[in-house]
Length: 124
Figure 1: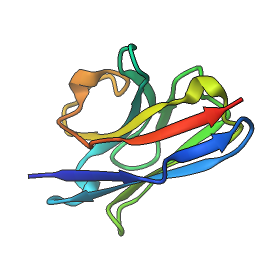
Figure 2: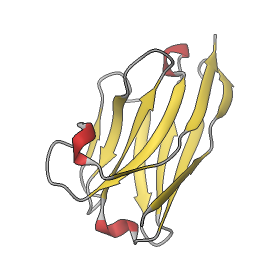
Figure 3: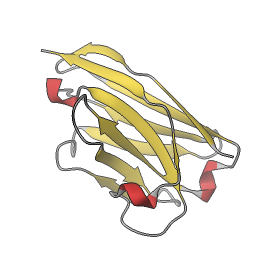
Figure 4: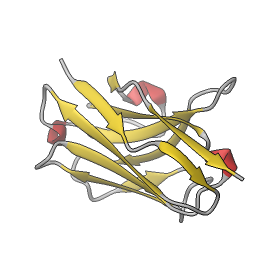
């Protein structure tokens, strides 16, 4: 059984930065492609960023491209999301996810396991 635990969320002013982490236990993270989604109150869960199993290829939503960077350290079984130039509209719970299913990494169905999320709040 895979467990994912996110950390690093918090309250930050617009223009600030945060770095989220997600530790994967139960299986080595190198077995999975990995990603981040986010969900704001009353809204659907939306894709943020993903990284391939090799770590070579990354994907971003248009809303975060150029501001966020996804990376992974499989020696530590950890996924990261560096978030810069944060905006109030980035406020949401950020959830880590991993999967083995081949397919579009921006789709929920491509992932098998999810964390509980870490809250990010950006004040204006």
